[in-house]
Image (cartoon, rainbow, N blue to C red; front, side, top):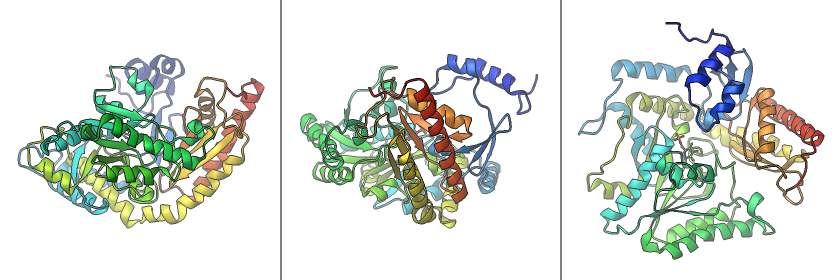
Length: 464
Ligand SMILES: *Cc1c(COP(=O)(O)O)cnc(C)c1O
């Protein structure tokens, strides 16, 4: 058998990849024609591909490699844990040290009385757990009618049946019979695209009050919870107007429903605090975590729940769990990742130094002719591309056409910046240096210039 290694020619790797590897969120037929870029190694904030190109990863993988690539401590911890205890479960009156240690650490870091962790291997699975958890919570308290979960259009909560249903992505709902029953979507606080003539403040209040209206329509006795990302990530790094979260918090306080903060992206330093809820002033009953929990070095996620929820759920047998719940290797790596974030004061440094610096430079892109607004919270930012800043117009082309062109220019200039529709987004490793931020901005500006020139040459600078 021929071994498939990094040393095969790129074209051969691409051919084998297209022939046998089904890519997520991709059109496989297009990929087969073009060939996927083969990433072979990574260090710090840079990826290396099979052609030896060095690419600045302004997305930290998929919003997850918070401590950067190539941290030897995480490698050592994984190897040691695999030698000592590579696997055991905690289903039947057993436990193990990585599960104990990580749970205690998360209880210490999480705000308020969020002191109990139910594990998963991903954010999607954690949100599937949350659906069953909140409905079971109310049923156990004698209120089984409290069943519906309210979430937001263009929110992202994963792509399993449950996570995809909670999310408000039309593309996901259009395939496979989603959403499942008992999920209700309200509008998102995206002022740039949907705010019309309203001020951002008024629009933020209006969108928050959609939650109250939905509770009134469905009936408080039928609503289990509201779930939202503190800052929408995959939806395009949508930062709500500052009136939004205080009003949502008021509504959740006054109404008898649980608040789930999906912290899968915002958690673990991304917004300049340990959790996005702290940055946005939210007091959740449950937090979904994954991604930055292990900096992506191992697949692990979970639901961190309040004392009260843990007590109610703890009074019954909760018929739910994954084979790899609190997987010892993943848990050990996550714990070491938290140690690195804490001892190297990475979260503090983000808040006091890196995020303010990135904010100033990122917002300077707003002077580019293609850029409408530049938004950023901590280390997650977006720019809206527009043919006309004053009217916040969308392009005449299909949504995402221009964003895709810009992303291709970014990739060509060795910068990973994603597009969501015609917004460009970044979420770099938290350890990015000042020089690397300069490089990120220079490459982004270059790609924007190239995009502008192409749109102009092809007559695409037209408003819808
Ligand atoms: C990525 C993401 C998820 C899903 O996590 P997976 O590990 O991909 O299943 C859920 N919620 C949010 C906010 C995310 O960004």
